[in-house]
Image 1 (spheres, one colour):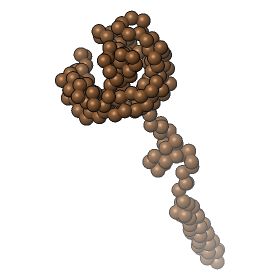
Image 2: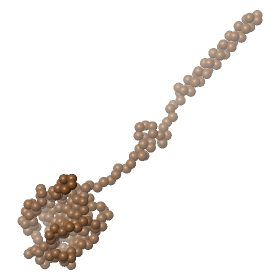
Image 3: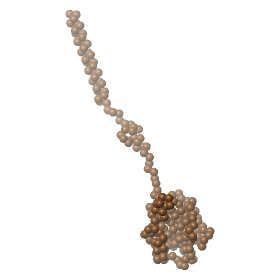
Length: 221
């Protein structure tokens, strides 16, 4: 009888251990198999470029085409004090280098140029005289001269003849680079005196406003 009681006790203990192990295994499997991975937070770098990855991208740097004159460029009045004729004034960009080529005063900065030439003239320039005389001269002087267009317009000082054209710049002595330039040549005239103001810069530069300031500022004294 005692032996049978011990057998029942062993069997009972084995059954309890099996049940306990089964319950423990079920709980473990349920915890690892049913739990979903934690969703990435807004600050997480998961997702290959999401979150902070996008926020840290620098804004693209703005750049102007070569030859664009800055919007904050200041202008100063130029009044010649020597030469064949000094009776005029015109605004030029402040700080540009000044040189002299005979009767021509030249202001330059990087790829842009303002040329001012004062000469004696027998009569008022016309679209015909510029087409017949000036265009052939420039064709022989300006490398790859092209696209001449002559027209009349009004500036603050009055009626002027405008010649626009294109041509190659001189070769850069350091880099050897040649730039394709656009030109605006304004012919101002009064009482036997002609002043030609030629503005030039790269063809893709947007200098409409600066060139308008210069050409519209011309005044006789």
